[in-house]
Length: 394
Image (cartoon, rainbow, N blue to C red; front, side):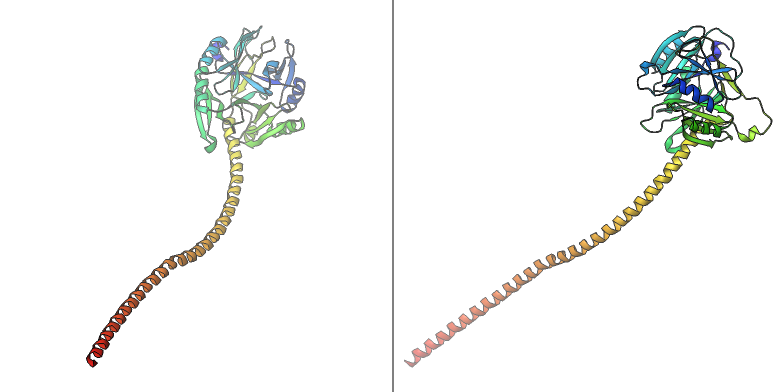
C-alpha cells in the first residue's frame, strides 16, 4: 500500500495503561488475541492470528492524571504536513512528530473538541497482510461535544465524508462517517458534562456474550450490552480492570449459519506507536456488515428509554403530590375566602349603619329644633295675649 492510499485509514491501535502485565493477561482471555514481544523495551505487540494489530505500553509519566485508554492511529502520507494542517484547524499538538526506526513516523494530537488521536506515516517495509477473520478492529466511534464541527475537522484532515445521520432526539444525531465510500465509524455527542471527548474502538469477535463473561471473570466491567443492532450484529461495551474502554462486535448470528462468505476488508496499513516495535506492524479494520453504524444510537436510545421511564414515574408521583397540595391549598384558600368574605361584609356593612344613624340623627335634630322653635313662638304668642288681657282689665 502506498503512502497516498493510507490517508484517513485507521492503521494502528495502542493501549496505554497503568499495568501492562495485567492488561497482557486480560485481553487474550476476552479477545482472539495473543501478545508478542517487540525489540523496543516496554512495548508489546497485539497479534490477531498472524497479523499485528496494535500495541501495549505503560502510560508515560508526562501523562499525569490521564486514565488508561486506547489511542487510535490514522494514516497520512506526511505526518509533519498533516500536523501543521491540524493545528491550523484548531487541534493541539500533544507529542510532536518523531521517527520510529524501520517503522515510520508518528505524532499525537488533540482535536479541537479534546479527543486524542495519533497520526502515522508508514516507512519502507513489506505490504500489510490480509485482515484477520476474528480480532480485527471493525468500527470506530467518536464521542464529542460538537458532532458537526468534528466532522468538518476530520473531513478536511483525512477526507472523511458525511454518511447517514440517525436522530436520537434529546441525545442529538448519531452521525456516520465514510472513507472511500465505505462506512468506517460514527460520531455522537458525549453524555454528560463530566465526560471527556474520546474515541472508542470495536473489535470483531465470534461471540459477544462469551467476551462479556470473560471480561467479568477477568475483573473488567460491562458498560452496556450485549445487544442486537440493526443488521443482526451484537455489540457490547466494556472496561478493562485498569479502566481502558473498548467494545466488541459479533457478526449477525443468522448470517453465521449460512455458508461463510469472505469478509469485506477495509484497507490496512503499517502501525506506529510512541514506543513501538522496530519490526513493521500491520493493522486492518474490517468493514462492518450493517452493524455498529447505529450501535451507539441503539445503546443511547436504550439508556434514554430507561431514563425516560424513571423520569415518567417521578413525574407521575410529583404530579399526584402536587395535586394533593393543590387540593389542600384550595380548601384552605376557600376557607380563608369565606372568612374574609364575612369579615368584609361586616366591615362593608358598618359604614352604612353609621351613615344611616347619622342621617337619622340629623333628621331628628331638625325635627326637635323645628318643634322647639314652634313651641317658643306659641309661648310668645300666648304671653302677648295674657299681657293684652291684663291691660284691658285695668
